[in-house]
Amino acid sequence: MTLIDLGDVAGAAAEPRAAPVNLPRLCRLALAVLAVAGLLALAAAAPPAPSLVRPLWAAAFRAGDTMALDGRTVYLSRTNPAGLRGVTAYDLSTGKPRWSTPADAGVAGYGVRPAGDVLLVPAAPLLIQGVEPDGSTPGRGTIALDAATGEQLWRADGDAFPSVERGDALLAETDQFGVTTGLRLVGLRDGHEVWGHAIAPAEQWTTLAEDGRPTAIVAVTRTGDATVYGYDDGTVRHRGRIPWNGVYSATLFPAGPYLVVVRTASAQTVATIYRAADLRPLWRSDELIGYVTGCGALICTAGVRGVVGREPATGREVWRRNDMNFVWDLGGGRLLLSAAANLASATTVLVDTATGRTIGHPFGGQQAFSAGAAGSLLLLRGTRTPPDRTAVNRLDLATGRQTVLGTVDRFAEQDCRGTPGYLLCPRGDTLTVTAVG
Image (cartoon, rainbow, N blue to C red):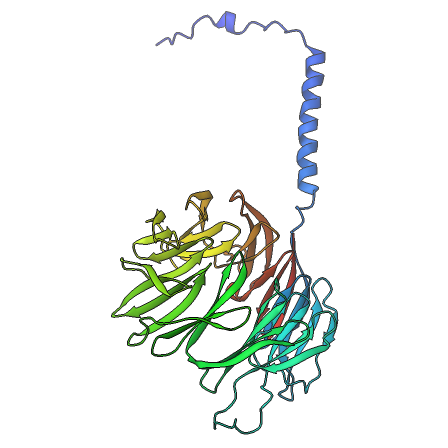
């Protein structure tokens, strides 16, 4: 018989000695367990944090309708079943209509322009029957309404471009081809004419400003003949000629007191900056660019080689971002730069306009952005979980920090408009107004 050594079984079978029980410690442990269990139960029962976005009201809004925002009012320009167009002002917080123009007011199908306490509404021209004496069909007109009551203040031919700071509006009269044939300066509230005269038919024109106030007007004909007019009195300050025709496209825009002319030819875009006083060229871009735009006090060139912030008077390179290709000026010394035009598929950064320095962390996946509260931007993107929703985040423009505000029913993010505290988005034949924050 084989024996298996199990050791000292006698010692193993002996009764163990009982350890003394620490009753105070046991009570403290039990209380701790109960406290943790209570906290977990409370957390499970507590409601989730309330969403900071919530739908307020909706209104009919079909293809071809337009909207404009001004403080706590939205102005909708819409066509009624009879085919007549009118404007209705709604209180943003309640959706209550404040006023509406008569159906026969002659409102045209273009976007309205809030201008302080005045609303400028594009309309059919006064000479709407037949043709003008020279055989041409008249262009557009403008109706000025009191923004608070909808009362008509004045009506005139021409498309109006207001200067709220000065209290006036520049009217550009056009022919049936969209060529500008006359300029007039009128009072914003009373429509009283300050000056006005016919000009050489201009393909494009723009106003130049100093310290935010318009000081001059530059108009260019299809052959490149350019004229500089004084904004105050309409007098001719300078005439000259700039390269313009013989290209695929040409456009001009102001950069403070400077004139920027962008021409595209042979798949190359070139920007030339002129001094407004005498139309003397100051500098031109000498690298392949995609487009040119104002960036606060700078001029930005953007394209496949990056985004460059330049000094307007000299073209000197102030900063360069070779990792980015597209730029949006947000105002207030802030830009958005992105590696692609489609924000949803590219890295996007918030940067300082003066230095090009990134503020906060890069982000991506946004489909659109819209105005938020003062010093912030709303970022909009479609969600995957749950589906058919749009996420709304707030981007702090001072720090670059993002805050999740909530989600709403999915809409076309690119068509949304924002104003402090509200987000307005078309969806089908409806405009939905959402409170934000």
